[in-house]
Image (cartoon, rainbow, N blue to C red; front, side):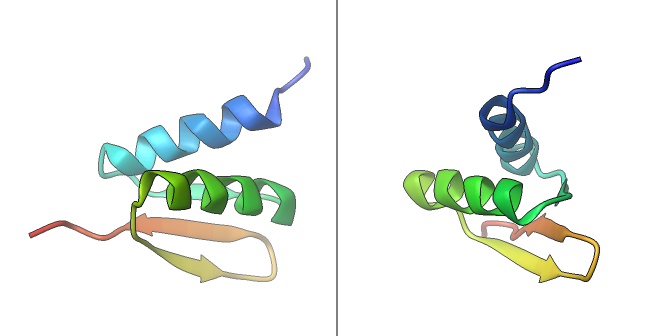
Length: 61
């Protein structure tokens, strides 16, 4: 099965926009997610671990 990394990053950003957390298994995927979030001007909390990065949405007041 071939997974398009760009589409995976966009899917995870969509999850974040819907209030769900997202996990990036690789630095490459985390970088793609961060670029997409930056272009959309969306703030999230990023928790970087030895195994990957968690992106947690910050509720807007």
